[in-house]
Image (cartoon, rainbow, N blue to C red; front, side, top):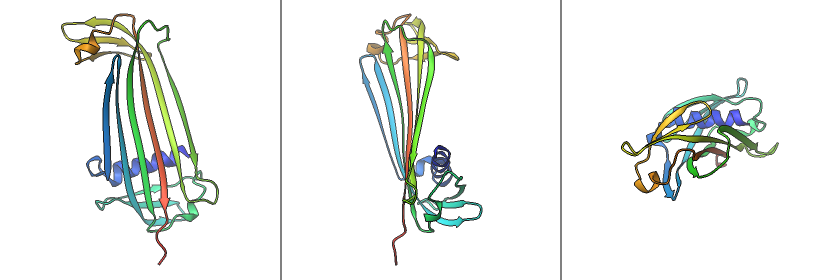
Length: 195
């Protein structure tokens, strides 16, 4: 399931619709003491213009006229229900939250969770998939003049600029910073209206 959802999301979001031409996109940025986050949602609709049952190739056309062909793998159980003219709607969410963990004994590291579900056998084609990655890093240096902090993560060390003076003054060497990155996509196929 995950591979078909990711394939369709990429085909629709990248191939059929360049980012500027997505039907609707909304973003939000939020901050609080020791916390900052950003989230973006995109809703995209494309129309099935061709289906090759033998190769399981499906051609999608976006509202700007861009077309992209994808191959539905064997995990797509309701492939036979797809019809030319069906509307494929993809709702995609992406978010990143950074949280300061003062005095935390969390171990520097990375964890990942993923999951998904597909439409029941015999139902309309569709499904959902999601992934969440958490990374914990440790603050190893604070540079007040440059307003940057150095964070050592599980694979690399990065310098982060903190533009908000109120947020910057909360950070000290030894603090942990937890970054949570989330992606989720839902696909729904609406049959073409009967004539």
